[in-house]
Image 1: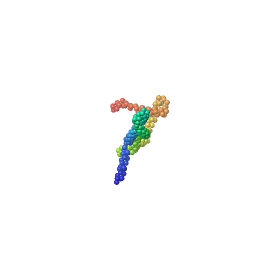
Image 2: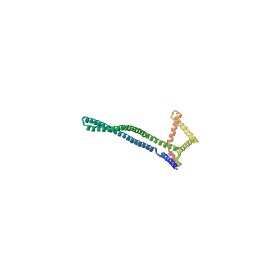
Image 3: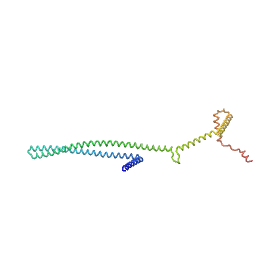
Length: 277
């Protein structure tokens, strides 16, 4: 029973994590990862600072021990010299006291010498640890800088991905049904093309009808009559006959002038006659 519950809990946790990752904003997750990397770098720097501080403290203890060693060595030498001078002077009591003091300095000197050697070993290990800590901080700083540079690249790629997704949706909308009351772009295009083709077909049928041919014949008759009129006018004026193209052009101009001229007024005589009758 307990194993089943544990297995079910793991499954539920994995499912929730998967759902969360699907719904989570990648930009927010990226900022969280960068923040965590910065926090980790800060903790590493604090640890490295503690290691370097231990090294500095060991070096200070070594310096104090060496100074004490030099002082005790000097005091021991001075006590030996003073004991020898008292012995030469015949003062055995002072000689014995100075000798005892020299022995005390010598014992303390031996202890300090051992302390110096131990402190040197400690400083050596602390120095190596300090160098390793500095190298770790430098490597982590370089990795952090690389992540910060990649963040801009990833954010740019994320924006491009979002834009491409929107374009894909827009392109899919052009070929898919938007709704029951809204036609698609393809449907509207098909309707317009069908209407345009039908209009072109009607125009072709109209152009080939009997009425259209009758209008062409009537227009040709008018052009022939106009050319004959122009030829008559040229003959009356004593001008040479014009070519066919010139006659056709002048005939068209004559027709346009007659069409634009106002209708002639009624004859006054006819009007009076009409009034008398």
